[in-house]
Image (cartoon, rainbow, N blue to C red; front, side, top):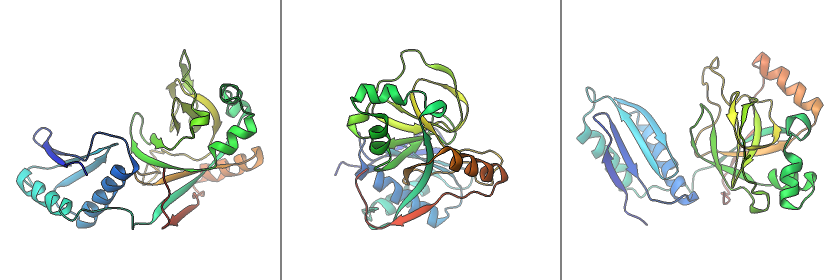
Length: 246
């Protein structure tokens, strides 16, 4: 296993570098460290921001010193923490594929040499690891898209992609959490709000969790959307101890 580095980032942040590659194993270890740090409720720690292969810890230097937070981190790292024994949290995200909700589904299918129905089946056949969040509030960087449906981004990005749009960009898939410009090929839409500033916890998903896309029809889409607008919808969540590859 690659040597973990602990670096300073300014006068109030510490960066833990776990490696230099994107892998479920590295990300799993990051998730385990994040959970241990949260469990300790370290006074002065403001935020924990995981990425593909690193973890940024923001802290208040008037409350906890760099040497103290580094010592706490080194103690945790010495445990050789792993996440294999932690339950795999899978969040179901319902998606209405195709039509006006997924205008590029046929393009994705043509590029793959498949039918739209086959593309949907492949896309919804696996669980996607959330490596990190970024770009937009609540935007998840997901791992595990089947190579058969890798699709290049649009040559000319759209000026506005609707909130909830599910798309493919190269070897990645994801959900647009709000209206924004974007260049991904759109294959569907979810009625679930992955980011809602009016919620007590605005961002629905966390790094280290998994997403499972569930195909739905128009009627179910509208039913869920109504519940979401009323604040009455909760995603189905599974806790699976049998961890699969992302």
